Amino acid sequence: WSEAERKRRYASAMSDEEVERLEALGVAWGVLAEQWERMFGLLQAFQEREGHANVPAGHVEDGEKLGVWLRNQRTRYQARGWSEAERKCKKASAMSDE
Image (cartoon, rainbow, N blue to C red):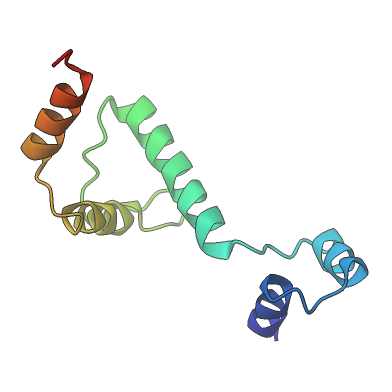
């Protein structure tokens, strides 16, 4: 049901009153974005506590599989087609005065 309501929300088939009533109950429209932000916050907490962000693959933070999430973020990063060295090089050249 909730997925159908989310689709209606984005298709503008839902009235403003319906949206407000669902939001008053705590319905989240951007579930994936909210989950990403939560995991990012856990990574920040890990980094502040440990002094680094190299989370072990099996690490669980506050009940969430932070190590798996970070591995997935690295996979997503690699899917962009640039290595870290290439990214740094492109960033440096974009900042140059040439």
